[in-house]
Length: 326
Image 1 (cartoon, rainbow, N blue to C red):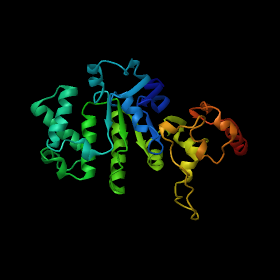
Image 2 (cartoon, rainbow, N blue to C red):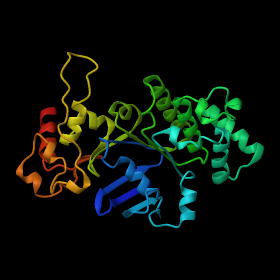
Image 3 (cartoon, one colour):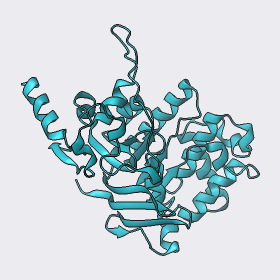
């Protein structure tokens, strides 16, 4: 399957300190990819860098292509057509993303004017259709509402409508349910799945919630300290996690059935960019650490179709699992 978006050796540093340390990632047309990991792992920075949305002090190197077209360092006019047009992004906090002094209908119409050249009555009619599509009740009246008059869930739906206005080929949803209660979270995730099915767009879902990713994505990429440390199809990752960090994340999930057990928390925290260990960044927190872990940053090891992990023990662990399974 050919890639819609390809990231190669994507690196980002702020004031000489590395925030991303070489991201290689492909997203195919129509695919849903989950990015998981603790705060500070570089999930959001990856896509902000690819879309040229980082501040000027950020140094970005590597490559980010959209169907072969390089995005890094391209002309601002070209990026303006890509952002919101071919690749749209939903940011974490809808309350701070919407302009509080502009009616929400006008904000959707602005996106329609920029990306599809629609104005006047045609733009208003399309904005209403988008509100209906994302499940905003009484859409015609809501077009004239202010952001503060809507709930958090409704504002998130407005943000999704704005993202869909340009008919994007890829939607990047950055923690789209963080500020919402559990019931509304489920509604927003169902909405994203329905939109993906109806429009055929690809989806990148950035989340801390492994359960959300398991239900919504085809493939999972686990990030740690600015690198992808493991990636695999959803079913394989949950059935045979290989990297100790991935197993730690899964071990921290409460079981839905069976006897109660104490949750296994991962000790320590993600290292700061200025205090990155010399070898494996996860080694200081890893129960399976060996002297070899401190010698060099481990390369990704290919374990099976679509499954790879950046751990020096990955091959041995995978072979042991296969032997036990047989």
